[in-house]
Length: 323
Image (tube, rainbow, N blue to C red; front, side, top):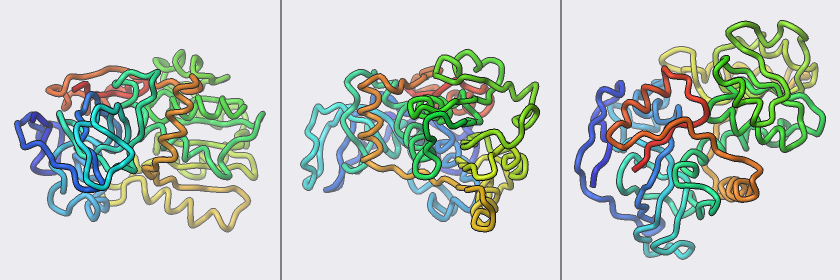
């Protein structure tokens, strides 16, 4: 089968399209014939091995799994001996490590049936980004009707879902994005849009937002806290920015350590792949409550260009690789 493979950590220039052996599913896995794969920050982090602390899990000297890709959608080709919930021919989506390939293995408890209303490309754009947004807006950070929510990075993969979910919960949503993404963010339900190239989140009315979802990872913690209400909730998403060793994790750690001593609730989100969340996203997609925004679909051979676009092109919504 054809797959996008890397032999060492580094840039997208090290990625190669190769013919490799088709994987064999273990007893608790299914083999998925991939139709599309998501392209998000998690792909870049695995490719580069940054922040370096993440290599404890990813592989110290090189990736444990040389095939790129983290999530996607496709059809079940075969099932392991202990799998009872799926059969060959089922259309599924979810966490499929090594998804930049014609076939990939997936844990049976990390995938669900694909929403009937979505294409494979749309479904591939949903798992990681959708689950991250869903988990960011849960617990104490789930807004009540009428509360004010600020989504930083609102036109990106996670941000487009966060805007839709917060709007669905009845919040008044303000999105932060560049000028090219403003119309999209408004179309997803945002009442207000802040153009980060022209103004800051605290320019007009500090202590304004009940919930802030920060997907961008560049603003200092004191700036984010000034934009929060005195008892508001901040959710820091991802590990963008920061040093090469810790990335943005150091900012999230500072937030967690500070939170017990102040009235504001500061969270650092480490998103988990959970089947129950995939089922929630499936239900919301089929009911039309959320819709994936696919900026562009690249063919498998152009996967390196997709990752380059992710880091340099400010995509609106999610990029996918069509297989």
